[in-house]
Image (cartoon, rainbow, N blue to C red; front, side):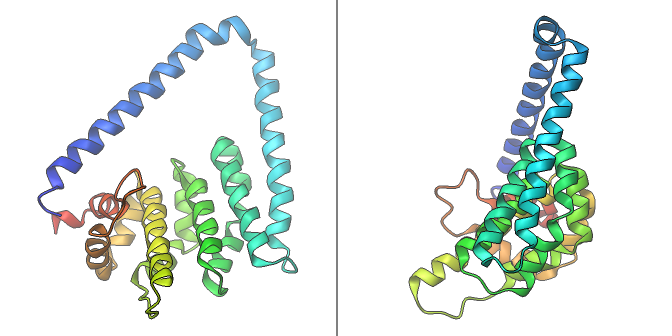
Length: 231
């Protein structure tokens, strides 16, 4: 881990700077060039309002499904996943609408037994909700998602069956991703994770696992985001 510190740090700085420049470039092009040709101020307000209403209505319908305890947990998890996706695509307003239902996601993850693929849907929902959204990140922290997610990383697999071992590891990988999303540019989440002394050890172990198929080794990403490499 220590040897790759310098490389990873430089890599993530370069990636961050690249996306900042890309975002600024698109924003400038839209504001200065394209928007003036195609969208009047009145039309822009109408489009923004229509998109906001669309996301709110969809989230309300899916949120009702998520809260419906007569439905199977998998159906509720699928609704949660779609709520997360809508909060991701709909911007801050959609994130605010989605926040109302994240308590149900927490409750499902904490208090219900489920197969790995269903648990992963719920983890993906949280990741979408928190992605590049500081307000959602703070709300997730207040809902106590951090200790819950840490418990997933710390949990040992007692089964000798290879498929179950792999599923257990996949949940840990997704948990690392969710925590990476939550802690990105969020000092309070970073500090909260640092308080769990066992997390450093578990991330070091998880970083040695096979992360092929993932864009990054998110155990290692989280390790550096939290600042464990400075200990």
